[in-house]
Image (cartoon, rainbow, N blue to C red; front, side, top):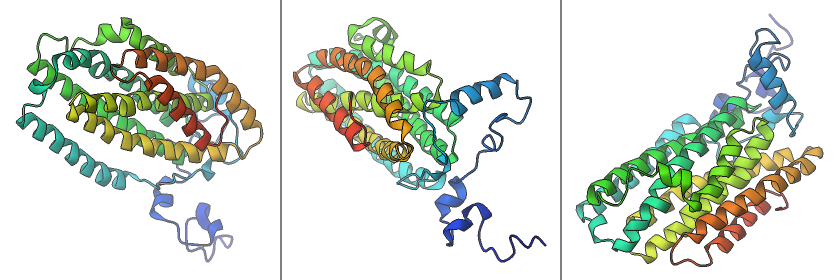
Amino acid sequence: MNTATNGLKTWTTLAGGRRRPTEYEVVSYNLHTRTRHPGYAYELSPELFMNRFYREHVGGSVLQHPDWDAFRDPDELIYRQYNVLQDGHEEYVDGLLEEHARNEHDLALDPAWLKGLPRLYTAARYPLHALQMAAAYVVQMAPASTITNCAAFQGADQYRWISRLAYRTRELQVACPDLGFGAERALWEDDPAWQGFRELLEKLLATYDWGEHVIALNVVAKPAFDLCRCRQLARAARDAGDTLTAMLLEAEWRDSERSQRWTQALVALTLQHAPNDAAIATILARWQPLADTAIDAWCAALPGVPEAAAAVKRGLRELQQACGVQPA
């Protein structure tokens, strides 16, 4: 018998708390094998490409902390709870879609508003995919399993809303076959309204340092995008009598708020290590101008909300201040 562990009544990694671990801790804490050997995360040759990549972009990240495993999701969300939570949310969304379809909602919309929906609403399938891929990169690279879990749920949220938006695209295409629904790729690639977000997200997807990536994603790019759509587009939709679009975007905002909560907790932990304060300030100075340009271009195309850009920028900086960082 190992006398060093004799008498323990819990997992050794959680024994320091001198209490029974929660379900969240049992299934979330310290699960990564890749953190056992910093020099060769994937337990093969240290010169394997993925080992070199991980050393450079995680071990050598601009953000450092002596114990990333100290991070905890403020919602303590686990896979089982996520499925229960989002099952109820999906039933709500199903109800919205079914009720509005029965009422022939799309056919009653103002023609001018309908013409703008491919540009500002259904074209968002493309940036939503980019945000989902960015979250997946955090899943792959994060140095703690508690961080990985949060990013995985965030990616799942993005994928759910991609699916819902694809469904709405097809509904609108059937109702209005001559308005360009289903052909939004050209808008994403060429329309001035989207080029700021396209530059922002394409540069984000090419940012390999995990620390810079997660800050640029969750403190700048994602909240900027969500504030534009889930707040300002939802507001314009309500003013135009498009209650379905407004309610779907408002439902999406609920998931965005959960992302904001775990982001605040992660940044708070990060700032416990003093050098990270300057590193985060540098990251924000690099990425905030791209976000501001994207916000200006997108909001300029939004009808009926002339103060939208100012409201989004104000909201974004309020979210950044809630994270404990000084906005750029």
